[in-house]
Each structure stands twice: as C-alpha cells, then as structure tokens.
Amino acid sequence: MGSGQWLMEKRSSFRSDSFSKEFENVPETGCLSIIVLGASGDLAKKKTFPALFNLYRQGFLQSNEVHIFGYARTKISDDELRSRISGYLCKDASTGHSEDVSKFLQLIKYVSGSYDTEEGFQLLDKEISEHELAKNSAEGSSRRLFYFALPPSVYPVVCKMIKKCCMNKSDLGGWTRIVVEKPFGKDLESSERLSAQIGELFEEPQIYRIDHYLGKELVQNMLVLRFANRLFLPLWNRDNIANVQIVFREDFGTEGRGGYFDEYGIIRDIIQNHLLQVLCLVAMEKPVSLKPEHIRDEKVKVLQSVLPIKDEEVVLGQYQGYRDDPTVPDHSNTPTFATVVLHIHNERWEGVPFILKAGKALNSRKAEIRVQFKDVPGDIFKCKKQGRNEFVIRLQPSEAIYMKLTVKQPGLEMSTAQSELDLSYRQRYQGLPFRRLMSA
Ligand SMILES: NC(=O)C1=CN([C@@H]2O[C@H](COP(=O)(O)OP(=O)(O)OC[C@H]3O[C@@H](n4cnc5c(N)ncnc54)[C@H](OP(=O)(O)O)[C@@H]3O)[C@@H](O)[C@H]2O)C=CC1
Ligand SMILES: O=C1O[C@H](COP(=O)(O)O)[C@@H](O)[C@H](O)[C@H]1O
Image (cartoon, rainbow, N blue to C red; front, side, top):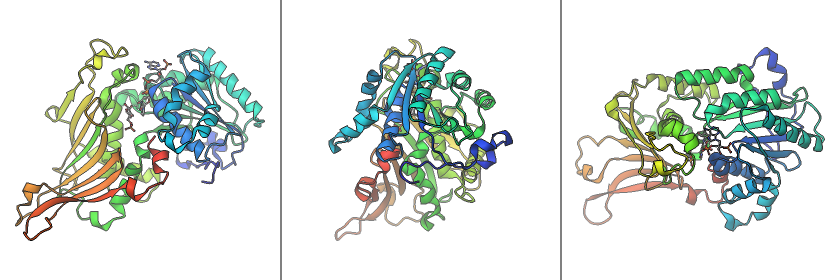
C-alpha cells in the first residue's frame, strides 16, 4: 500500500448482487471522513485517536483529504476533546513530534449529541457534508467511516441513526462503512440478534468487526512461528505439551469506565474475544492458505472442539475498591478477574489444559502465551528441580519470544541451570515502526 493510498479489497464471498456496484474496484478519489462515536471515552483516547495519529504520521492519512469527527453525548468543545487526547498521541514525546501532533489535532472536530435521536446525527451529517464540500469532493465519491468506540448496547440504535441521517452516495467509488468493537453481544442469542439488527441496515462488506489483539505484532506472529518453523511441527501436541497458559493482566482498574465495563465484566471484555482469538491461533491446524476465510475455518473448528466448561475450573473475583468507582453501581458483583480452564477435545490437544486468565487492577501489566512442555522422560540430570521447558510469547509490554531451556551450568561440574534463548523485539528490531502501528 503506497503512502496515502487505500487498498480497496473485494470481499466477493460476502457480496450481494444489489450491492456489487459499490464494491467494484473503483479508484477512491473522494475525501475521507472518520467519525469516532463515543469520542469522550476510554477506547477513543487510548487507542483509536492514537492509532489514527500513527496512520497520519506515516502518511496513510493525508490532511488534504481526511477529516476526523468525534461524536458523543458529553458536552465539550473541539479544543477540550483535543486536549483530552493529545497526551495519548505521542508516548515517546522525546522524539519530538509536537508539530505533527498539532497538525493532526486540527483535523479533529467534535459534535455533541445523543445516540438515540435524529437531531445529533443530522448535525453530524451537516458537519461532514460541509467538510466534503470544502474539499470539493464529487458527490458519490466521498467516504465515511463510522468507528463505534461505544458500549455494544447502543450499536443497534446508532446504526439506525447513521442509516437514517448520515449515509452518502456511493456511485463514484464512495462508501459508508462501520467498524464495530467487541464484545459482540453478551451471549449467543444477543449476538445473533445484534448481527440481524446490523445486517438489516448494512451489507456485510460495509461492516468491519474489530478485535485489536489481532493487530498486535506477536499475535500476528503466531501463524508464522507455528507454520513456518519445522522445529515446532513435531512438538506442538499433547505428546509434548503439558499445558498452555494465556494470560492478560492490567495494573489499573475501570477508572470511570463502569458505564461500559460493569454491564459486561472481564469474561466478555477480555476472555471471550481477545484471549479466545489467541487460543485459536495457538491451537488451530494449519489453514489451507492465509485467506481470511481459511483462517476463520480453522479457528471455528477449534472453538467447536472446546468442551463445556466445568464450574470447578472457573475462578472469579472482583478487586477491592472496584465499587468505589462512581461509574460502578454500589452493589455490583461483576467480575474483574477470571481464570477458566478450557479443554479441546481433538486428536492434537486431548488432555492438555488451556488456562486462560484475565484481571484488572493486578500488580503488573502483561499479556503472554506460555506453552509449558512435559518433563523429559528418563531424566539423568534431575532437571525437574530447574523447571520445565517453556516457550513464551510476550505480547506486551516489551514484546519478546523466549524459550526456557535447561543447560549445563558453565564450569567444571556437570550441573544444570535454566536459561533462555531470548528474542527481545526492542533489541532485535530497534527503530521499526511495528510498535507504533500495532500497539497503540
Ligand atoms: N478501553 C479500551 O482500551 C478498549 C475498549 N474496547 C471496546 O470499546 C467499547 C467502548 O469501551 P470504552 O471506551 O472503554 O468505554 P467507555 O465507558 O469509556 O465508553 C465510551 C463512551 O460511550 C458512552 N457511554 C458509556 N456508557 C454508556 C451507556 N451505558 N450508554 C450509552 N453511552 C455510553 C460515553 O460517552 P458519552 O457519555 O459522552 O456519550 C463514553 O465516553 C467497548 O465495546 C469495549 O469493549 C475495545 C478495545 C480496547
Ligand atoms: O478490549 C479491551 O482491551 C483493553 C486492553 O488492551 P491492551 O491492548 O492495552 O492490552 C482493556 O483495558 C479493556 O478493558 C478492554 O475493553
């Protein structure tokens, strides 16, 4: 993808006839409006705006064609929104990007309105149209991307409002698309209902479901590690692996996010989406190709092989002080910590526990995959004392892949010690932009 260019992907397998015209490979020339719904919230400030900033800084968003709109109920001015997010844009401020930051902030405008009445969305539409007009974008060529940084409970009504008030014409390569966040519903029934509600308003190629863990460098690396290295092929199974631990820890609590979090809890917030996606990549068979459909098919097979979870293999907890957050109801029993053991009933994984753990307000921030191998049979070195072989993929912070091995303790004696083969990304890939693109 060249600087400032957008690749328009044909998703033919999802395409319906009535919609095919819009998704032909027509060159995109019109201006682009990115609308962040829920702009006052946590996701918007910590991830969405910083990710947009990184795209801007690397030339993927051009100031002459892009405008960014924040939309939420909170009544704040453009400048107030800008100052809320500016501190999150450039964590490495020492590298001096203040000029880029202020140019980027000038692309942002804020519109306040509710999620369930037309008034606010009509105002939003007016602001977007004015921007399109100012950029001389031909009618039918402009692009509108609505990013839902919102609790899923409001997705259906927001979709309705967009459909009613904010659609643009698309006959000259323009489009209107939506990006929806996880969790996609609360259970099977609500998820299917949500799909049906959104599906009534938008065609599949207009809907993008996002799980930002799939954008993390080391999550993406799982496919390569597993299927491009001969080393792992014979080892990656129940004969050699004792257990797999997939862990997410955060060292901060909800901090004002009770409006979203308390309704969902840690299982729906982290385990059902981020950690299950990671589990699928660890456990799935080699896909036929890297096509999304082929990868999805293998993931689905893993999920279908997971046995029902036993109560005694679940631990739930809530951190002390959670209910002191004013956005959390006083008597909430929403879990902020959970451990769940999953068993995959197939030829490769029978008998290998997959231990998924996620918690907020813990003593450290870390996300990792830890594959623990079985003990060496017929051990002559008393290796057990040192601990087992482990293959660890640290997703964050400080991305790394390391292997814990038993080695000879240097010296005259034949004694053993545990050591590591360590691929730390900070050292090995200094200066590469993967962190800035992916890990916002
Ligand atoms: N925070 C994060 O790091 C991440 C969050 N997500 C996902 O993003 C979505 C939003 O999460 P997050 O930004 O953290 O949540 P917030 O609680 O910060 O909510 C975002 C905004 O939505 C509005 N809002 C909050 N609660 C309600 C409600 N009950 N009804 C209507 N509007 C409400 C508020 O805006 P206002 O009142 O101004 O309208 C708020 O600023 C969730 O689906 C979450 O799973 C995904 C990845 C990371
Ligand atoms: O989806 C979410 O993810 C964040 C953690 O994301 P990370 O990339 O910083 O690990 C979490 O704080 C939030 O509760 C959740 O909604």
